[in-house]
Image (cartoon, rainbow, N blue to C red; front, side, top):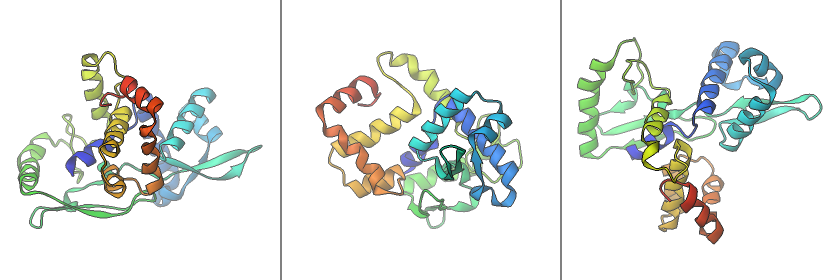
Length: 234
């Protein structure tokens, strides 16, 4: 269970994660209390965040592909409008969402994912208890209700995961190691092992089962060869 949360912490790598965090900050500033419905255009973001046109187009393409943003309107000749539809569940988990007495974690819904209550195993309850009552207070350097705290004492935003991936990347010189390919490899291998599609859907936090079904292409020989060559856990 907790592994699925960690896998979802960051499937964005490097500069894409940095851009996504800047974009979220900009949207929250412009949208105020209704930031989750604020739509933006590429020209607007390019000017506000000082990003080149070609680089922004790559970021937009990647975020669309990963379903972090969605097209919300506009026209081909005037430019399309977009809206953030995924705001990182892991960063939204707060202390009040952890119920150690009943052994559960409440995951709030988003436009992209359903709300859910995850059940903790006894050993996981003990780990959370240790973290919440001993580790987290020792790390904390700011006033926040966020569950996950970084070594700097601030709320986790996913960048720490990239740091860990980059640190251990030299151990896998023949693999395209990043958070996204690790996630893709795990999902692909679960389906390859014959795990039920809906079980994998919940594990991967996919709102639409069609998103999970895409990974079934791994049954094709040529795609399997690509996974073995490029994916770190293939």
